[in-house]
Image 1 (cartoon, helix red, strand yellow):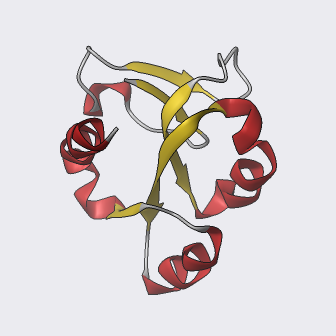
Image 2: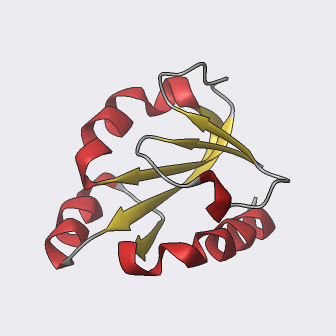
Length: 99
């Protein structure tokens, strides 16, 4: 699974079978999964066409309810609370089943 992140995350959160790229640092433009947070929402919105495959799933990391309210207008597919970030790989596994 090709994953691009628009925010800083620990690579150790994801299985080694996945390819993790950081947007703006040599991304291929073929991401199946995008990971972003509230601080990167506008970078994501402006650059998702360059960073992602035709079909992709977006996962937003939220810190509080106001983040969720902001994200819901951007068509985000999945959310994870930052305090539950250690379960990120579980969401990616579910996404893999969908694609």
